Image 1 (cartoon, rainbow, N blue to C red):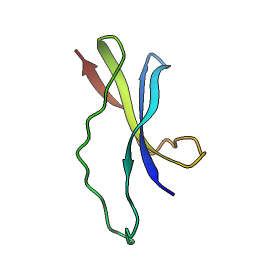
Image 2 (image 1 turned 60 degrees about the vertical axis):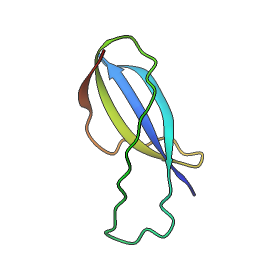
Image 3 (image 1 turned 180 degrees about the vertical axis):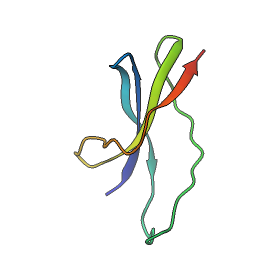
Length: 75
């Protein structure tokens, strides 16, 4: 199944943005191989500091939480 990157932005425990924003073709990817992809994503939130996480989503499954949040500043 295709894999999508999902962006989550939260502030003070409240999620402000949670959507898939890009697809990644992993067809033919072998064990211990990786994919590097430069991406841009639109953000429709007010300026300020947010915690950001990019996770993987596939099919009808919810996006997983595969990492830590990173603090970002949206201007």
